[in-house]
Length: 494
Image 1 (cartoon, rainbow, N blue to C red):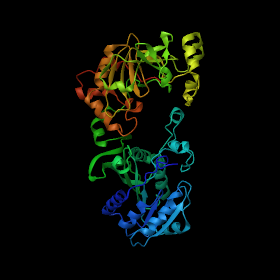
Image 2 (spheres, rainbow, N blue to C red; image 1 turned 90 degrees about the horizontal axis):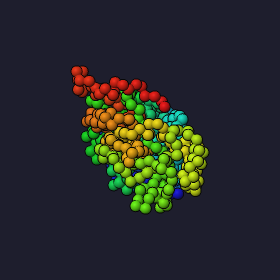
Image 3 (cartoon, helix red, strand yellow; image 1 turned 45 degrees about the horizontal axis):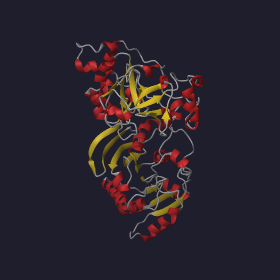
Image 4 (tube, rainbow, N blue to C red; image 1 turned 30 degrees about the vertical axis):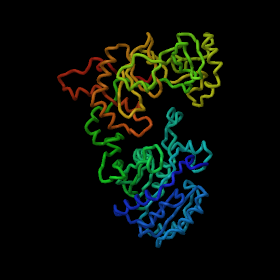
């Protein structure tokens, strides 16, 4: 298994030196160093160089190939140090710390936990046959559909950081770990849930492309542990750490990406008067998405497709939602159901469609998600899909933009599952909501809450918090909010 497979990016010496130098200049004088994923030892060498106070260094590394390299590097350094060094080829999740080390802890030393844990998820490691994963568990305690659709998946580095803080929080110390920015976000978000005793959390952003030749948003996550729980984190560049760019974390029971921005636009936080929906999920693009050509409809396999017209609808991908209005599309989608749970066996009554689906059954039957337990089923379907007008946003973009979607060739347009939307029977109502959502204060509210380094910065959960009725705060009590907002009731669960 290769380095990339294990998320194993050995930290270059110039970066380990820079990190340890920064920590030393901040006044850190640790007695004990723990490196839970030490690799060939670059962080250890830099720590010995910049922290003469160290008297014990404890290293764990799961990959046997690094043991000889580690010992060779330790023997080769031209550096005097007084610290005792222990190295263990083991899995940090199941490792039992040595008696010698535990005896050192009896003196209440100041601990530095330092390193660069793997930048992969537990699912990726399991798929690749690796064993550096914790016992199987849903650590975020997701239930139902969230667990089924992958929210219980997590980064190995996230679990290592949580594991180390929880294990050593009875002592005073500092943790400094390179990780993806999403991991740092999750650590702070989880702090109340796991009662993480941390304070002074900082995220110093690095150029991961330059440092590791990896396209990822990453940084050095630093926090002091062994204190009362704090739930915010300051963000700055590692290359200019004194200039804070924002602070994220918990504020008034909300987890937000920019606390200062949220203070100005958080008045919009509440319950949306409309129910946001996610686009249709099917996981069978080559079969269910068709492209319009001069020769007719062509599927993703390059085959010409002819099926009953009533199952075909114009299909708008999230990539089209950069436009302010959408009135056409080159794609069509086959909808096999009108409501969630519709019996798809009745499709036998439509010979062209049934022949097409059964002849491509290997693609449809091979979908692994349990949401497709009924053959040929789709997800995210209901009466709301078939309303003529929609206001939609793509969750993947870094800037919030709401598009007005019109019917196309007399049929309602269907959105893909990267999109979230509201649907309307009236163009007038759709336009009113579209304009309000594209107002500056709504966009600033979204940016105050969205983590732009996430795969999907804008989520259904966030959209359902936009209370458009509160826009009246801006226009004053003497000017009425649009009549349609007054008619909305609490969204149903249907």
